[in-house]
Length: 272
Ligand code: ATP
Ligand code: TZP
Ligand code: MG
Ligand code: MG
Image (cartoon, rainbow, N blue to C red; front, top):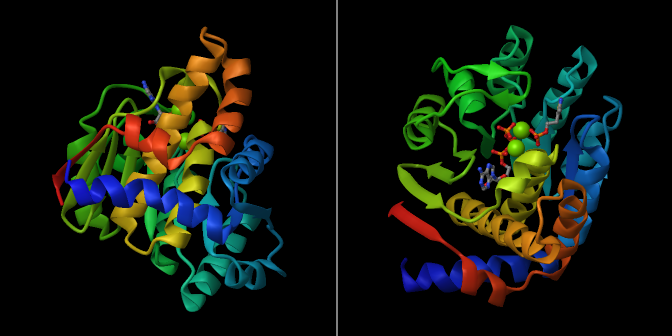
């Protein structure tokens, strides 16, 4: 790892806490409360606003807009497009989590519609979701990816085909932005036993991109912060208990410091 990146990445967390970015989420009903609590714990300011009468105003006032299609309705798609356009006009970054893309055609088509109308700053999903959005066939069952995928290959190809920065998460997290590529090895398998950990991560990436305009660096910083917080949470709960781990993850998102990140970050910059 480049020494400069070693210093720059942890410092983005301090920047986030200083600025307390307002993150406007149009998200799903499963993860709403967990997402708000996770953003608050980290040091960001969450707001959920869905009515088409108010989303443009909220998105324009926010520091990041996060669109999450987990429990989609026609009304929500309409609101997401209105909010996304307002965010684009105000130069507010827009993060898109294509939850379950490929599981039904409605999800895939809605993502395509949103991406046609709104300029996306970051697309974050599991390998199968991102593959399906990019037109690369991959199996989905509900909101979970079914089989092993070549995440690195999919991330690079999707970023190129869609012309959008991409983060694919899983055992390893991949960041592909403008030909740059990074792999993050932090995280804990208990994250797969708590619903909404991917959705919360997408919103947290929104908070990082709000304070750091280099999307490549901001994404790496968000992923290592979250990954290291999950490792600390596992150390505290120290057994395979998803319930305690979920609560401890919130605690560690509040407690994590630059020093913890410097000590534990496992980041490969493959092409910087
Ligand atoms: P899925 O529906 O496939 O679980 P998701 O949207 O929940 O996708 P994940 O890929 O689970 O998103 O990513 C959420 C967090 O969990 C990320 O920080 C990621 O690094 C971490 N993670 C996922 N799987 C593992 C694993 N096997 N080991 C360690 N960390 C993991
Ligand atoms: N069903 C629709 S949205 C959702 C479920 C279970 C939450 C998915 O959250 P994540 O973060 O992708 O695990
Ligand atoms: Mg998961
Ligand atoms: Mg998800």
